[in-house]
Structure formats: C-alpha cells, structure tokens
Length: 259
Image (cartoon, rainbow, N blue to C red):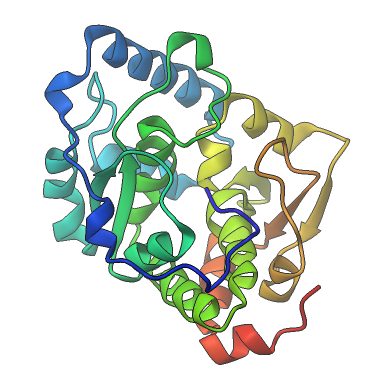
C-alpha cells in the first residue's frame, strides 16, 4: 500500500534484497483456516459486484483451492500466462522498490496472514490482500500490461521527485478503482475486492463522491490509507482505465497539472 510521501531521497536498493522465502510449510492449520474463511465470505460478498475479469482470474489461478496458496504453485500458472510472478516479502516495501518490482512484472506478496481477530482490518497488506485482491487481475493480459506500465511510470516519477503522481494514479486505477460493466457499477481495485467493509461501502454508501475516472483526475485526487475513501473514481469500463493509463508516458505524467 502506497504512502503519499514518495521522495527521491532514499538510496535505491535492488528489489531482490527485499525478497524472502514464503516458508509456506510454516503456516499453521489456523492460518489456512483464516484464509478459507476470508476467501469464502469475500467471494459471497462480491458476487456480481466485481468486474468479470476478477473471477476469471480466480478460476484460472485455481485460488478457490483450500488453504493459502504457495507462490511457486501460483507462479506455475501465472508466469506462462502473462509473464508476472509473485515473490514473498516480510511486509511493506519502500515505494521505489515496489514500482521497480512492478516494472519487471514482479508482485510482492506478504509472507504472513492476519489473525481471526483482524479479519476486517489490517494496516499492513497480508497475503490475502495481495493474492486474493491483486493476483487475479494480473492473469488478464491487458491489465497485466497496464500494471507493468504503472511500475515504469512510478520509477520515472520518483526519479523526478514527483512520486505522488504515480502513487495517486496507482491508487485510483489498481487499488481502489470502480468501473462500469454491462450498465452496472462494479469493483475494479484490489483494495476494494479484498476488503469486506469497503467493498460494500464503495458501491452503496451515499456518503462518498463517485467521480468519472481520468488520469488527470487520478493524479489530482488524494487518498486515505488509514480509512475508507471519501471519493472513488469510476471509469466507463475496465478497458477505459487500461487504455488511459497505457497512453501515459513519463513525460505526459509529469506534465499534468497536480495539486
């Protein structure tokens, strides 16, 4: 999950330094039971409320299999399909490392899972948020290309001291986006797809703004990482989000006016 304070002050280390073994065999029966509980209730909640490509990815990657997925088994399906792979990390990675990973079609997955007492909220993204929320969409060829492109944009923006532009773009296209599909408002972002409370809130609450998506609006829309969002951006379709983001160059991203 990205912060709004991306700078170019920290020295850039290799992203490989942040990779750790998943140690899948160390997950307990309770850990696997928590995954199964989270998976079952989120699938039931989402129903038809999420873009169809999401459940296509769930099926393709066999994520409905009981228990926490292991990264090797996941990569055996994902990598041949779209060139993406997952790696285990111990928690949040610095923003410049995160974007560098995305630019090479590598997605970091927490090597831990929340407890039963933390079902509804966890400050740091765990393997359920990462694997259930993000990875299904990376099995979609065009979305996979967009996510890599966001990584390249982020790396360039951070180098220019404008990392907040890429952070906001990522947030409103990958994490907390909404999109229309077949005339209905649907969840697109991973943060919404994996959240029991905010997935419902984003679609049905009358207390939030829902504004048309554009890359310019995304860059100018701050976000909250510690609470439900006060506003969501809604694209005309998944394809619109992908096309607009892919059309951005690092130069055009930096040229957008930004508050």
